[in-house]
Image (cartoon, rainbow, N blue to C red; front, side, top):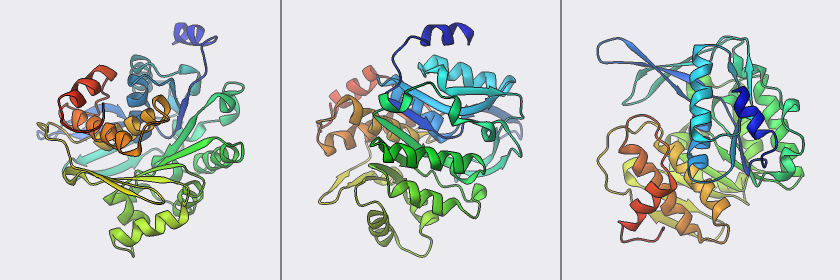
Length: 317
């Protein structure tokens, strides 16, 4: 880690900064045992964007122990900027995953490492260099971290920086202010990714169509990517709607598919800012399909994404 910090000290600042939680998924196996894997929706999406050629940082705090080491190692392997990750001597944040299909979570982490993240310790001038900053996950439900991140989002939007949001709704983690924070960031966002489950959690009294309409009302400047699992994806802008069927693939594991879609979608905006919305949509769908064909929250490479799209008779390369 020290060597990585030295090497990055003079490196260009990231184009994408993802503010969220990095945690350890404790997954209950069929034999009743537990397997630990580093994860967190924002952290997964950051790794995807980095592997797709975008200078990316994950901004968050992790524990200084075995679990934190695994997250740190995974970050460095993906090429994330280490200057934005803070190590603290607190207990790790754990997600107890008692079921994969459907996913069932219980979060353990009172006074855990993620809550110690301090935005004032970020590198000087980071905001001036960032093209997009992303928020989401249970970090927006965990005070006092959540209110610090909301302040960063407001500061960034006021400075003219492009904001992205992936709520990654988890009912088990919500606090009383969660929805208000998400709505406040949404109204300042240029890009929002939601799943059908996110819509149900954010707007429980509305059906899917009415929920999208309400999100568009809250976030009139945003493009909204709606992921529907095996039913594909839809992309909504102020004037248009685009659809992309799910690519055919051998599904091994759906963990991290939504994160792969988000990371690829945002990376595509940065790498190809003049690209058509439908092109960005297909790149997101392709990344999700590649992730589904692998075990765990897989981050595809530029070459894998290009080869996958080249094999399809659709827009997207």
